[in-house]
Length: 90
Image (cartoon, rainbow, N blue to C red; front, side, top):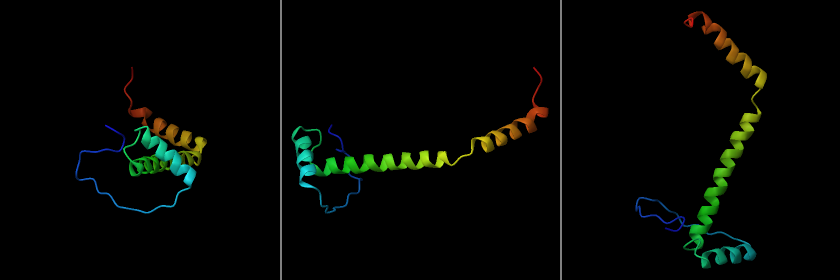
């Protein structure tokens, strides 16, 4: 099965019109000719899905950059220390 093909009829699709550089379109057409995608629409949709997934990962990485390691360590140690009295002896 080619990327983007589906046998489910419940997939909701919408038509859009885009403007794209001729060079990019020629590259896309070559990929379609190589049968890596069944048509232009499938190739463009795959590219958009991939880009959106990358953006989500980038936002997560940026959010992780905002975490203060010292503050997180203090929270973790506070929780560990408060529970020590209730831990069984080994």
